[in-house]
Amino acid sequence: PAPGMESLPEAVLIRILASIPAVDLVLVCRLVCCQWKNLVDGAALWILKCQQEGLTRVESDAENWQNFYFLSKKRKNLIKNSCGEEDLEHWGEVENGGDGWKIEELPGDFGKEFPGEEVHKYFVTSYEWCRKAQVIDLRAAGYWEELMDTTQPKIMVRDWYAGRSDAGCLYELCVKLLSENEDVLAEYKSETITIPQDNDASWTEISHTFSNYGPGVRFVRFEHGGQDTLFWKGWYGVRVTNSSVTVEP
Image 1: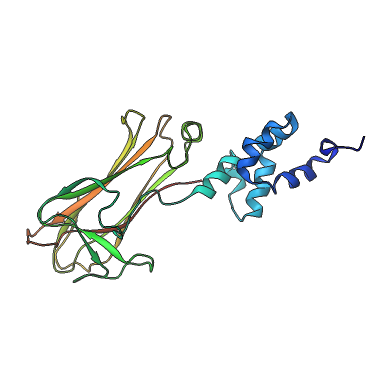
Image 2: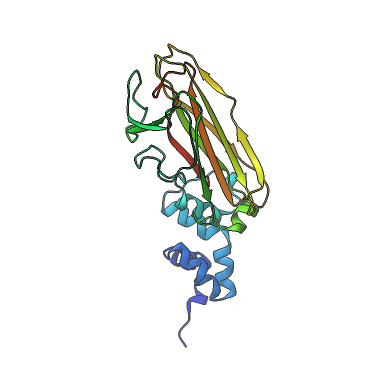
């Protein structure tokens, strides 16, 4: 009989397997035989796929190249409607103090353009506390339980805030990692940030990275808000936009 694929040198077989879609490698090819299972579970195949698709990583920092590949391909902002393009859609637990939340076009009165051409709108608060939250279901977003419990990839949180130059305001950010039963497993809470009146209206980024948070994380709860400090009727409070939560490779 003619020699089969099992007779191929391992390096050649890895190159053949690297041309197959990643999901098929895990769900189909891995089940063919012990040799293929070992190759799919090993680093060499995934290092090659990463190289072929331009996914770079410091090799000394590598623990699981398969997870790195899937996390890199899946990487995206998990916050929906982060810039107010859909009004308040996807935001829950909304607290509408004063005249409530409003969406405005950049740069807005006494404001500045955002440092990024992709952002066109922002949410703005009023003369009493306005808050809104979004809960991200990590499993529904494609991050399976074993990955979250064993690899515990970093979870990066970012938000942007600004005041108007003619009014002072307050801003807060609170992000929680929650279990299946919504117990708090890790939390980041900013201080209450005060922007004085007569500020330069520039946009400021705030960020936090969760790591080594332990097993059991299934949800991320993102909440932010603020108000003005002058209690002027209308929308003179803090402005927020381009919020993001990403699971990092």
